[in-house]
Structure formats: C-alpha cells, structure tokens
Length: 429
Image (cartoon, rainbow, N blue to C red):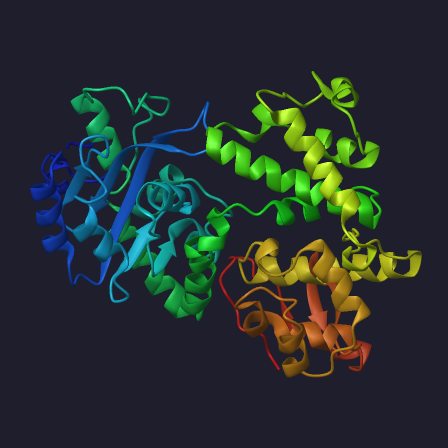
C-alpha cells in the first residue's frame, strides 16, 4: 500500500494486506504472531442504531505485516487461535484509544486484549497531547499522513472495496513502530509502568458489563434525591441496562437519564402516571410500562435499613474554595512542567479531599488511594510540601517558580521552575 501523502518512502510500506475469510487463514495469522513481544490491532464497526458496536473488520499487525479479518465470514470458533494470542501474557497488544476496540472483542468473542498499551495514553504521558488522535500522532512522530476518505464508511456492507481495506490497514501498519518509540520515551521518563497500569483499565471486564448502579450514582450526584428515590433510580437504571442489551438499542432510544431521575422522584404507581414522560425522554414499548412500575414498586418496598444514602457532589466551603484555587494552580504548574494532562493526576473531587485530609507522609498519601496510578511517584513529595506549607509559587521573570517559603526572599533560590522547552524535569528535594 503506497503512501503518496506520507513523508516516508512508499518502498517502506508492507505488501497489500490480505483479507482473511476462513479458519485456516486465522490459524496462520495466530502462528505468525505467537511468541512475538508486541503486536497491534484495530477495529472498524458501526454503532449508529445499536447499543453494541457491530464489528465489520478486525485489523492485526506486527512489525512487518498487516492482516485483515472479516468477522462476518469467520466464526468465533474459527477465531480461537488468535484469541489465545490476544490473551497471551507475554505478548503486548497495542491499540489507539482502545476502549471501543476492546468492547468489540468482548462483545463478539468474550475476550479482552491483555496486556495492553493504549498509544493515546502513552502519548499523553509523554507530552504529545491529551486524547490526541492517531492521525496527528503518526504525523507528529513518524511523518505519516493517514487518509480520511472512508471515515464514515459502511463496514457491514459486502463486498468491501479494496480502497476501504487499504484505508483500514493504514490504521495499524505503523502502530508497532509507534508503540516502540513511545515505550522508549516512557522508559526514559520513568512512566512506562504508569502507562501500562492506565492502559490495563481498558482490559477490565467490569468496564463492559451492565452496571446500572454506577450510572445511578453518577446521576444522583448531580441531583437531590433522598435515599428512597435513589433506590428507585438504581432499579430503573438496571432495568434500562438489561433492556437495551437485550434489544441492542442505544440508551436514549429507551429512556434518557433525566427521564429516569424524574420517574424516581415522582414515584408513579399506575401506567397512566407514566404518560407524562412520553415524549420527554421515555419511550415505552411492549411491557415497558409494567417493568418500570415494577422497578418503582421494588424500590418503594425495600426496607429502610437497606437503603443507601445517594452520593453527593462535593462542594467546597468559602474557605476551602480559596485554598482549592491555590492547590489547582500548583497542580496545573506540576502537570505542565511534567507534560502530563492534569486529569491523570487528580480530578476536582480528589483535589478537595486532598485539602480536607491531613497527610504527613507519602505512605499516608498512597494509602488514601486518592491519586491516579503513577501520579504519586511523579509529584507526591511536592504535593505534600505544598499541603503542609513547605512549598509555594511565585512569579519571576514572567514565569511561575516554586520555592520554599522559609528561604529568605533575597536569596533568589527557586526549588524549580517550569521549563520553557516543555521537557520533563525531576523535582529537586
């Protein structure tokens, strides 16, 4: 496949990727990949009118070759040799923004690629941008320009045109090389384990299984529900999760979030009570009303001793709000200096909890589990110093610097400063 728009030579590109449509072809791929230290994968799918992604093509690559597998022709049983490779603990699997690709594997074959490196996460932890797309990342690191001609193609239509297959192959042909470059950079920065831990979250089965309670908790945190209404909401969200999976339709086609919240608050007892929600985010069909009323009834009948208090969104007091502003400035400074997106360090609720708790040692901070994997190693000591009044920020030469408030103002000594070039720095102690 040539790359006339790429800065790389066309001779460096692999041969035309074959389309595999039978068990023998899959077995050959598995044999070629078995024992390799690193391989790459990607998927093409549709999800416009369904809850589950409809897998249309699976792309696999190593350092030298790309294979395309037609999941409409190859059965799950045919895929078994390759699925064993996806589960091999000695082979690192690479994908870019891997969550939906993993969901395709889980839904169609019941497996998740592991161990995993998500190159989007790796790019973020090496200062190349948060949630950067594959095309700009390849352009930035390998001077490869991906085509955009089939971004909205129907991957379930058959036969697949050669131009579409070439387009799909482009998404994986350089992924192994890209991952190797990122891994070297992560190793240099001391962040390889961090990237692998964050990527491993994309291989957690619970991420792809129905969990109405988790959705209810998020909805309750943004509203004002009592414990009884929260119980009803949990049962309603679980009903929706089970129903959409059975019917394979998007959530919004059955019931929007706020419709479920309003039903939990109003506690309807009769079918006619639900009519007010028709057209307002609720679409009831074939027994839906009875199922909703049953969920409400079960919530109302739950013994008071078994009710949970709904989660509440943390709100800072006026005094905490001022301190939170200082903390966020410092965290942003650390994130920028270390070329790490702030969300990989802390979120808003975590920032407030860091203020409210008293931490004197890194060990206490680690035990709290408030920080994301790897964040403790990157800035734990500096965070403790700030929280305990031993570190501050000042403006010098138009740039922020951190310093020890105990130092004489005239000393001009700074503990560290944001680097102009954006290169990684280790904290001074």
